[in-house]
Image 1: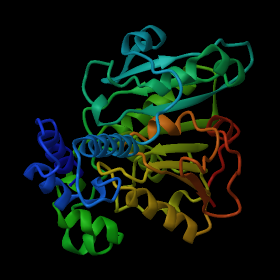
Image 2: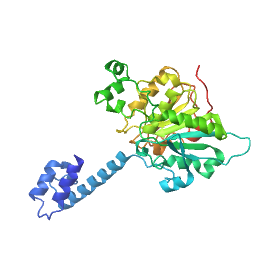
Image 3: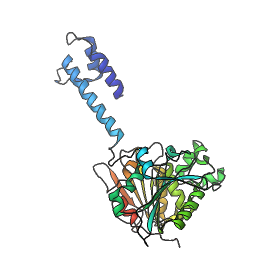
Length: 351
């Protein structure tokens, strides 16, 4: 409607007007009585021009609001990240590795970083994302020295052969939001069979044997498909990881989040995300809350699918931006800085 209004005003008011009884002005006044700024019942060219300017300003403001707040922090280029991360291969799996400055007899955390759908392929480049650069910054490493591994997948982050056959009976057991997803088409649920997450797990074991890695401080995080992958890691191997940060993700509906209720999770999702709807994170949170588990859920007001731009630089809730965090239970760590929260976690095994 506003676009039509602006077009109408631009097309009409930019013409040359005669007297205030000009039929074009009368037409604008009939449609937009608020354009009569002095409330005299007639419309002058000056009033029409002023009203048009006001409408354009409102239109720009609304467009900015739709885009949401601007993220902070450095955005690393692919070339910069390729210089920082060493290219490697393990059993056919391409990955990038960053190693901290190692001191004798010390062991270090490892962060498993899972890319989204845009990182799929076999170039060992697109799997590097801006948050990988944040983890390698000298100041960051001085406080949190860690290994960072960024594997690349050609499909979804799943263990090969782990997906069940999606039958009507199985769908009936899914959370309601997933039933609605399936109603639109089963492709989203059944897509990308034959993932390589099992090889990723084998890679983590191999790195732990060869590098001074603290296996009680292995973390997983990722965005979008990588957010799904982060939850998938916890569902498949809940006793491997010390904590997780899924951004704009969800959990395959045949898994029960209660399986990893003991693992600290801090999930982020934009409330305007139409690519991966926030209800897919909410349904995980609701289940974790139901069983008294350990999960924080930050809703990013006004943010679409780009939750990662805020999640991996998060330093606390912002009421002015409608960024708010909810805890599933009183076992959740109230720490507001996402990296301080992550690196304070040590693995706890399920009962």
